[in-house]
Image (cartoon, rainbow over all chains, first blue to last red; front, side, top):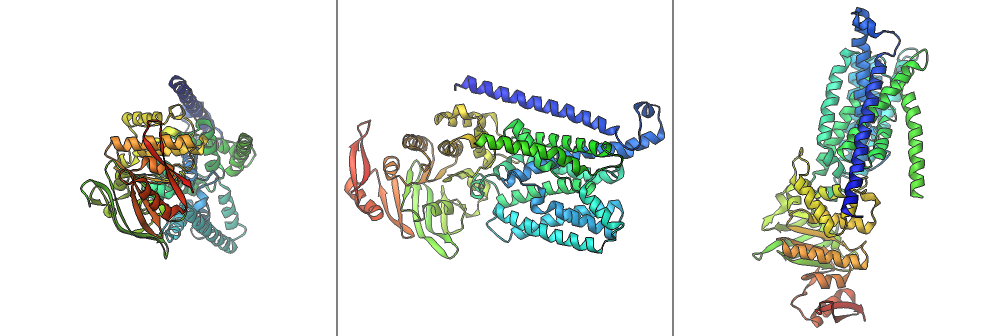
Length: 336
Length: 264
């Protein structure tokens, strides 16, 4: 293959990447607009333009916030999934590998039982997720070799501990009210999100995402052996700690607003890597866009598929599982 | 320490847990010198390279260009020394060019991206090993030998003073291992670098190394100056490691005498 052919195939790949971004962005914008107009309380563009106060209130307080969380939350889950899969060199790695989701669930259950206000539930879920990850990383730091497998093992231990705490909290919860709230929270939903409760979380997500993009090059080097990464000038333990904590903050901020949302962090990076076939910063951005598309479309279905609102995870799984099966089948055929 | 010693190791002791693998090793590698480490399996060749790279902890003093490395951060250390591991652990889809560009990481700040000049250097380095047509390919789709060559490119692309290689020939075929070491040794001679290479292939070591450290029983049993010592002396020293062997002197394509080791 001569250099002209190599350059030509590079340009072809570059064009394909741009096309993916354009299609992804257009699709996301369309979903965002559709999501603004779907819900229990119908409203129209005419109503908004005529200055109908009730419609404006619903639009500003509920719909806009919900759609924004769909986009930003999905983006954060996609990017965090990419980071976890890269750092742990494991295509099945997700934020829960270090106890984020189970910590958030235990925290949310604690909030529902002892505080009951939605703001406190959000704060407790965030605190639970963060505590679980800090505890995982502290446990892992006992082994000074700093191996990835130690972090995973510590994550399994913390996950089990958080699940036990969650079970105990469920046992003391009132089956009629609190237990149902805990279960519903665990199923995940963007219902109940309003403009007052999301500002802080959105800010945290934005800051962590910006920093994760800054750390992208370092995160990719973490996908080598520890010794190799060290000899590429990386402070392996510190960099891994920073990158995992930033991803945790992003995921915890989403989970504390919307409950557990399955599959987005797992599936979005796989689709992005299929499309871009690399681990460049563009792939990471594509993971974010695909995460947003997945969550926004799942939320639209959750609001419109039945008379009552359904948990969003039902639809992220319905969209995610076939994709995952397709990827496994295609990957398997390729390796044969 | 002699004046032009680029890498100086004094009284290095290392091992795993309570088990001592290397005990009080001392040696020097000078500027433009290629030094090979030879020894039987499990003698501590990789332990030596890993100790120098600070991947495993050790006692003793390591100086690079006269400076004690113990106070250096990983970044400063990587600006001065580069490593070619036995096998790269990169476990994600990434382009060949991006793998080579990783070599510049110690020279880049957190926000910085590789410059155009760095990209050109990386492309040139891949061209040296005839891998320029694979530079946008997925690293994972390369053969093990090609992957190893890419990792060697990553180590050679920067201006680190010391190149440490741990059995770089292990996954390369006969022709490629010779051309690889030929290129590496030429680059070491042309620049102000030095190389310490652990090798299994004695014939390769005899052809491309200036000095050979023979590791046996947790220490350096003897040192061979390939350029100065005669065939019989070298043969006697190699016998202490490999047992019943014979060194033959054969002319190469440039009519220079070349030593090859055969089982007696």
